Length: 457
Image 1 (cartoon, rainbow, N blue to C red):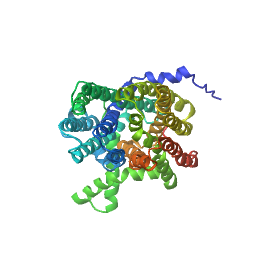
Image 2: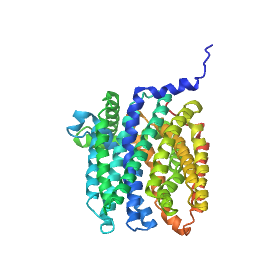
Image 3: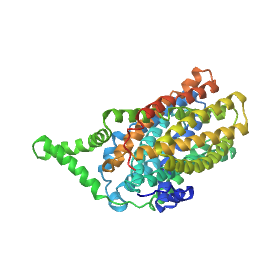
């Protein structure tokens, strides 16, 4: 009889010292940085140019493209970028292309005024969101493919490192954006946000340089399995010619990943998974969409927000993301999902206290620390959960599908967050209580399917 000894905490922590984790950290930073641009930076730019909370909230609809990037994810899985693919690889070629689009958009933003050209500003923001969402498809695929299919513990550690990287790109990018805007504003520049976008463009260039240090293999199995699906569809069509080959390729590209997901999990379980993924982080999204507006309205400056929400928040997020990864490894990803869901709901209530007490730097710091702790646990568990569900034949498409459905709940519904605050007559305390309650339906879905899930481990 074999006796298995449970790993000590130190032995479990060693998984973070795998060289692949540094590469995953960098990929996460590349993915998180664009959210600074179309999130807090755009929101404050519009706020300080006199636009209403509702307008800023509805402008957040540009994030909805993240909910639909699975529609073109099959293209990312199969189509090669001319010249770039041969030079730097399939995945990296797509990432560099999208980073270039974001850089061009930042340059255009630096030349326009939102009060005069609001439609153009939002349109450029939409293009950034599309490029970022497209980039995320291939970043997530490249991240997952850094880890072996049955390395469950490494996958959960990789999820933690990806989240640390994402928040590093988001939080530190936010520190740069907010402090740059504050600096140029105090220096007397009226177009201080436009200058800030040029500074952010330099960071985009840095991301592309860092990407070159992330290796990429060219897996033969993936291409061969995709071709087998094409041949199967072509055989079902009963004939072989140029038309049937095109139909088989298009059908295999678009439908193959969906068929694979439902076949693996079963129809009812697959639907329940999708329901859980859609609902899990809605409350966090409502809070996050309006948080910077809330901070501004109760009296905090851009420097205060940069220090507490971005700088202090980044340190907290890094620490608790790594701890969350360890918790997921030792306790299992399902238990981690339940714990993080409860934490998200509980910490949202701290913002109600801040709203009712008025401006308090101590309470602000406490609320940010605990909120980032909960968000870190939740994001690690969520990323690990959907990473362990995907079929490696369709890595980009299936991950994008699941991530997009999660984003759909966060972006489409959270776009009404500003309108909800207005409907509550600016009662931020009640608003944050509502966001706390929003997590409950998702945990009900998870409880229903927890014993029937098939995860790669």
